[in-house]
Image (tube, rainbow, N blue to C red):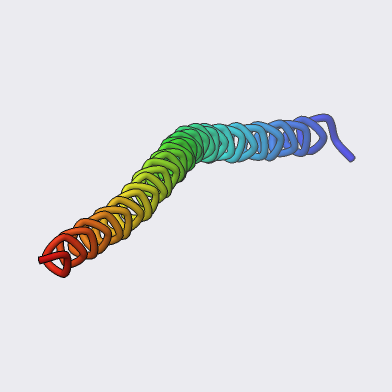
Length: 116
């Protein structure tokens, strides 16, 4: 081969290398952009997951507070019910004692009237 032919062949080879290099640079740039997009999506999803975890924690806290409140109300109502039951028993005992006393007084009265 002649020098001119070899020179032409080398120039064409260099042109092909330059073209491939530019294509690779273009692909690399595109890949970097896609990577940045994926990283941004990852960041957004991480933020969203954090927000959801926060909402879940708030909901759990609210459930625990509600549960505690219900337990306190239950204890309070049971105490009030027990006090009411005791008051009713006391009232019933007082009523029975009063009835007994009235009966005794009536019996005494009747005995006094019988004396005449």
